[in-house]
Amino acid sequence: MVLLDAGTTYAKILNTDTNDRVVKRVSDLEKTFKADVGTGHNINRFAKHSVNEIIALANAGKKLIKEDSFTLLDIGSRDAKYVVFENRNFIHSDWNTECGAFTGQAIEILGNYLNVDYSKTLPQKEFITATCGLLGMGHVFDSVAAGVEPEIAAARLIKGVCISMYRFARKPKKIYLTGGLVNNQLFVKSMPCETVILDRFTLLEGVKEYALNNLSK
Amino acid sequence: MEDKDDKNYNPMQDMVLTRHGFIKGKEQSFLQNPKDKPFVGIIGIPPKEVMDELIQKSAIILSLDMYKVDQLITEPTDNILPKAYCAQIKRIIANILSVTDYWTEDVMDSVLVGRNPISEIIIEDSEICRCNEMGFVADFIENELKIKLRRVKNKDIERKGDFICKSGIPLDEKFGKIAGYFYRDMEKKKPFRPEYIKPKCAFWGTPPWGDFSIANYFPIETHVYGWTRCVENLTPGDLKLELEFDPDVPTVFFSQSFCPKAGLASYLANKHPRGIFIDMDIGLTRSTVAKLTAFLQLNNVI
Ligand code: SF4
Image (tube, rainbow over the protein chains, first blue to last red):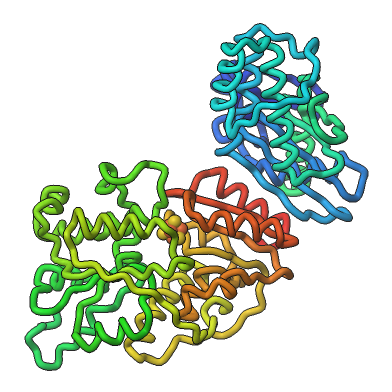
């Protein structure tokens, strides 16, 4: 079975027969590509069946996380969502698509534009708050214009995004984190609480669960 | 068709205003000839004494909240309101302007020459039951449309009950029936009292003005709380009632985007053990639907 998580920018593909895992840009997916099941913003174009992203995330959390109570947060390039479980029971979830949107993408664009190597940048205490990626970028450019080093300004925005994501997820003591930003060390180090990284194929584990329970019958 | 000169003509028959608008056929005919009776628009839920007075005067009453509700008309408000604005306020203004449509093609022009046939608009703005945006609407009506305006406060505190809110009829119909209930009460018709159903989940908030189709995702076992429940009780300014929720069932705390009640909704959603805050502008988006259905599914509601 071929599973696909087609986000706004990246597509994650998992072949459950061979266990092959591929990440590529959504724009690089062949037009004829059709996964068996999938999830994500762009899924309807590329898969025969689609699974609600939050359901996929919840399934993934239940399967991959051994603790009975946990918060799993997925930060994509365009949106963020989380699920909270207590005693293995679903308690809460939310998905922000409007405010706080495009933060992942903004961080990536900013890094390229300002030529900042996030792996070599230290987390900052000060932070820039921004309701969305675009406003955040504007603040970073303003700071740079005011004399702040580009990597410091970018790191402050990242700190701001981390704090707002932490608040968005209802300030848990510990966060399981998935999504594109897990590869950004500066982001992970800037999180204000204990953060455990799950890889980018996490959502696909949830899709697999869904497919096994609903499609193979 | 009703003949309005007929002695048996009962103006109450023109007041069948559900959220689906007027009963077909009557709408145009009376809008084209409302001159013989006071033609009064109402916004919100005016208190009982005001409604009684209108009925005595045989006024034709147009609910500007509900009228034409199924059409998402925003165009007429484009020059007046910013894009990021409450869909319901847009609708109210569009509704007022659209009444003029029956008189002349050019809505804006006719607005400026004051040819709107509505003789008076009554705004219920009891601070808490409606947002401050109503102040702006009132100013617009008075100064731009030059329609006589009366501001009234609804301080009715006698709660009439919430049978519809806690019944097993589909959520979409609940909204319609609750609006209709207000008119039934005016008409002194027997109140509609459907049977109680045990809830699986709840909807808290104002009616989803921007797109009623959101209601289709809820099961019939959805109880209604918040301002909509206050409306069924005919106590729209009853903040204490509005703040109530049922902690035992998963609850969707809804607000229109750009509505000040969003603050209340998100606060209560955080307080509720299994609550979620959902806001919506005009038209449901894919992500709102996904967020809502995931919430209902993960809570084993659907
Ligand atoms: S939905 Fe909110 S902002 Fe809109 S009219 Fe109602 S109270 Fe006001």
